[in-house]
Length: 107
Image (tube, rainbow, N blue to C red; front, side, top):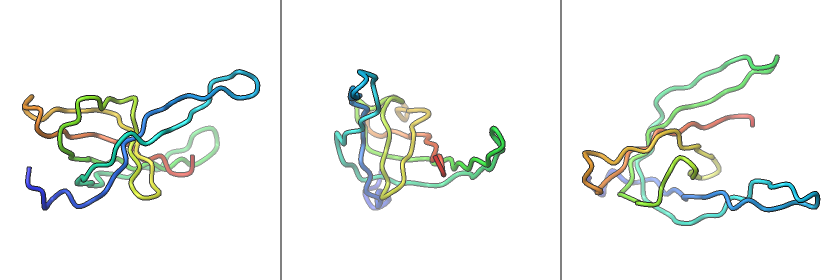
C-alpha cells in the first residue's frame, strides 16, 4: 500500500458502555487510535422507515493492518461517523485492511 494514498485522518473508536442513573448501559465511544486512511464513498441510499426518510452512505476505507479492529468498532472521519460492517485482511498478509462502512445520516 502506497503511503500517498492514505491521505485522510480517521479515529478508531470502541464502545465503552457507561451506566446511567437507572443503571442502564448507554453507548460511550472512546478513541483508541488515529490512523491515516483512504476513504472512498461507494453508494448513497434513501429509504422510508416508519414514515421517515433515512439516508445512508456506504464507504470503503483502506488502512494499515490493525489486529484489534472488528465490526464492534466505529470510525470518526471529521464530524462523520462510519459504522464498520465488514473487515477484510487483504490477502491475509496482515499488512493492510479494507473496511466496508456505513454512514447513517440523520440518526
